[in-house]
Each structure stands twice: as structure tokens, then as C-alpha cells.
Length: 259
Image (cartoon, rainbow, N blue to C red; front, top):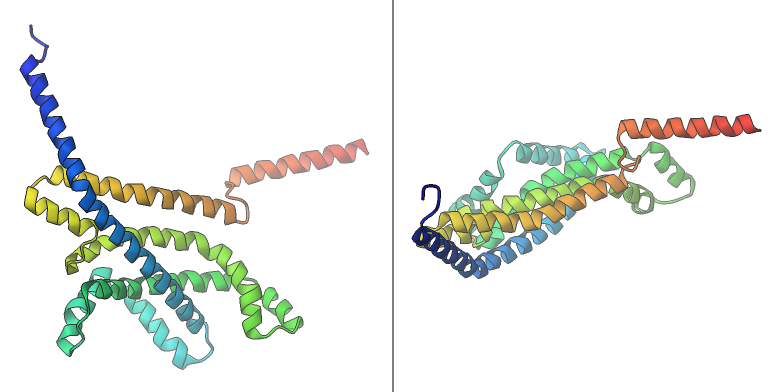
């Protein structure tokens, strides 16, 4: 009868699907090893970039031009060049002047150089968002510059800087795929290796995409939650804020009328 799939075709399709599933399970342990290295590199770079970015942000706010000038030049240069260039330079160019680094160390340094510059702008904006009256209040209490920065400025700046910092962590995790160009066996490079040997690119890169998504989605959700929780208005839209204000005014007028 027309419209019905022959029994042998159903069996063949089931057989092919079973083979694909077996192959996907076979490749998964190697891909998970690459994922572990990807996560480790991401965390190391984020710690280093956060520390260096904070120092650069503080230095750029210095009143001394000899400190502020070179740091500004560094940030502008790094932000104006691709991360791929930083990785190539550290891994392929530095050996020409006698500095040869292991691939993982070169990758960590290359990513740290870029993300420290990006995060320094986040931290500088967050510190600058703290009202000047807060610093004046700290001075009136007799706090030193270091104490006022640590106890007054930083807690408020952290509230502003945390959501974009988490977003940068998400971008950093995805940018670790660039490390495949310098032969670091992270998730993407592992997928490329398996694909070059098996030619099962559809199965392999589908798994790679799923693994990236499984890590990135919780971070994206966390970034949204942090942004909503730490925003001054609690993450409410303009219409919701206006409606809330109207309700408060209506309730206050009603209470005044009762009096």
C-alpha cells in the first residue's frame, strides 16, 4: 500500500539510530575530558583577570599621569584587537624572542590579557557609580583612603559590577574554544580530533554544542537573577514601576481621605 514505510526500511532506520546513539555514547567520555579542561581554564583565567582588572581600574583612576597613561593605552589597545591575535602573539611570536611557553600557560596568559582589560572597564564604571558623598562621609568618619575604599566603596561597587562580570564569565567560557588554534585539548579541540578520525562531524559537534549549552545556560540564568536582584528597582520594568507608584499614591490618598 502507498504511504506505508516498508518493514525493512523501519528496521534499517532503527538500526541506524541505534548505531548513532552508540557512537554518541562512545565519544562522550573524551568530550567530557575536554569539557573539564575548558572549565578549569575558564576559572583560572577569571580569577587572574578579575584581580588584574581591578588593579588596572584603580590605576586608571590615579591622579598620576605616569600610571594612568600606560594603563589606558593597554586597555584601549587590547579592546581594539581580537582575542585570537593575543593568543597567536603569546604562543607563536614570543618564541621568536626566546620566550617559549607551554600551550596551556600561553592560552591562560592570552585570555587573561584580554579579559583583564574588559573587566577593568566594568570595575572602573562600578567604582565611578558610587556617589561622591559616600567618600566624603567616610572621610568625615576619619577613615583612611584604603579603609574607605575597602569598607565603603567596594561593597557598593561590587553590587553594580557583579552582573556584568558573570556575563563576561559566560563569554570567557565560550571563548576558550579559541584555544584549539594553539593545540590545547579543550572541548572544541577534542571534538575536532575525534571528527578528523571518525568523520562523524554531525554527532560530535551536536554533542559539543549540547555540552556548551549545559554549562552556559545555568550561568546565563544566574546572570539574569543577579541583575534582577541587585538592580536598584529589583528588576522591574518601567511600566511596573509606574503601576506600583500609582498604587502607592492611590493608597495614600485613600488613607488621607479616611482621616
